Length: 601
Image (tube, rainbow, N blue to C red; front, side, top):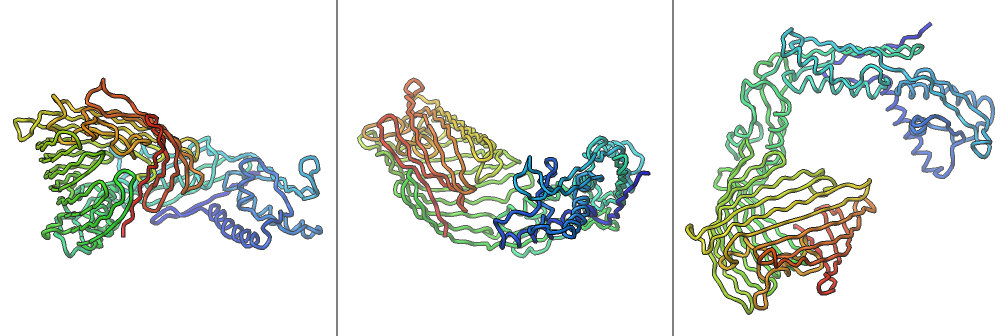
């Protein structure tokens, strides 16, 4: 005679955990806690009984079933242990679909296990398989209409625990959660699982599943109810909403709206939600709860880089410039080889991720015996959409260049510049898998406030590839070419030099370029590449070996690729990745240390 086991649950707002899964968690907390407590007193004491079971059930039992730590001295101890084992192991195996296990305690198994430690042999028996799945719908979604029928068929087709698959309690709960989430993602914010039932026949090892989902009514967005706003006009918030009152409810739009608000510098936090109240389903109010950030901030910092030497800086930020939620950034940075004074004013990003910026700055550099002093102003239109950032700018620049032993020039140019950057990485701070691609093109004309006709093109690609659990292969390449009659009359920003961190290690910063007098100046062409292998010994510390190649010259024919190679230490610091590299430049045979660190106060 077959024995049928039925698990039935009512879900008023969310899926509840099954009885068997709850048992598994209780064993984990209870027995695991006991095990941890015992380990503190008998850390190296082996259990008095070992388990013999098929993989991967052996790991499940070792993790969640507490073995005795003292010897079973008589039949009473053995009987007590076996009663507990049959009860707890049966419930554990049931979560994996095994309902008819057998357990035998052997005094010893000399041919497989040395000594006389008893062995608990667990034979799980046949695994229960799903034979039938019935998914029913109620509420607005169940209305007989082509669009709704198509959606129901799509939901049923996506059900992950289908016929022929092993019946496991965790998979059963996960399947219901996915189903409910899919229904509630569009239109039906108040959807709930009205009933779920798994009928398991332990004799035939079959499971029949039933799920009834009540979608409730279809929801539409209502008006925004903004809380916590004092300094800013409500249009700052409403302009970012990807929906308007009367639109059909979409959970992804709600989350996108919340993310945009959280990314605004004007707020410390932002939460967006609607109440799934069936009474207000035709115009559900959207509640926006904000916490405003301090509008003005001054920060200082210090650091060191083998490229430009030691530095100190002071920065000022105003998130509500002119009381119009404009973002003002100003900063002074003093480095050994470069000094910069800059300021920018940015508008708030709109719903499409667009914003405008106006900037001005002055900079002095003295690198590789080339002194430059430049002043620049510019305006740009920027957009960030998903993983792609674009920038179109109009910049005016005046540069006073004085190479030691070379030609002293003052160059002016008005440049129309375009830039595209695509970033797809698993972790922005510590990438292990993904890529970053940057393309830039811009130029100036003698007919429009420029001393020279030129068109600058540049592309850079960086690729991370994970190897095993701890290693990463990094590949990087960049190419650049400036179309122009000559390099003279063109500011250094639109020419190319190479060498140093993020370029060709083993050579000084911007040491690879065109020699003019005693100085190295920018050329019209660039080519560099890197291959680097990283191995992480721990989560924070790793090591790398690398080879860099590259050069900058006035023409492609004049390129003479320099090679640098070496190794270094990697540290995942709280402020970002740090690298300390020792590299040898093949041209001169010298060893050079490359390092960069910055600290904000």
